[in-house]
Length: 111
Length: 117
Image 1: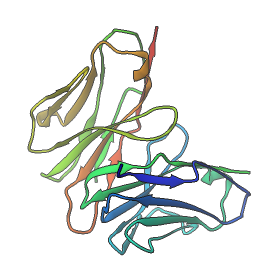
Image 2: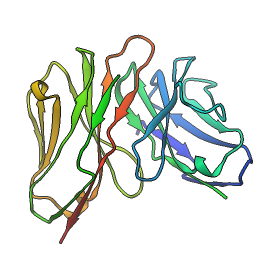
Image 3: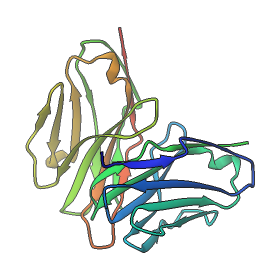
Image 4: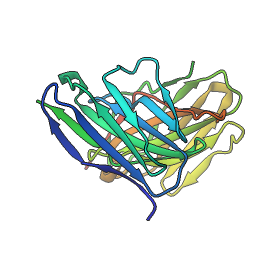
């Protein structure tokens, strides 16, 4: 089945140690998004790729970066994770913004 | 700026009761999309429905129904004969029309629904 896959499902990282979360899709959607969802809060958009064009939200900290080497893959890099970055990270895809498919998420713990 | 308000933080019902989750939105766009998502404890977001701004027909899918009223900027969600498996956080979301550069979903703060036996 066509889908959005996030690995790993759970990630534990040390304070200040760079971490990368991955997302892959078999839907051939041209838009990919990364959302951050902290406990008991709504998902918040960090950035998105429209094809190869990167679009950063104005309030996304510089500590967060993203790469999209090809249509199928998108990575979220956190350069120096802090305790406040512990959250669920959700990847989503869409074709031209019509209909979003979310992955199962990666729950990040910072110790 | 877009905004979605879900005033009900938490609702508790007894199984088989009907329950309505409220959603009010704000947007300056004339073309937009509204969504409902279910988030069970496992964390994934499960798509329930998408409605575009030009389609005000109510929709029913099994025990689920949605009432879209542009006059009051509301998009409410009703579960009939609730079941324990309906327990989850439900998010209402708004997306502006595609403008060629991608767009984003703006989520409400969610409503935690607890269905008890």
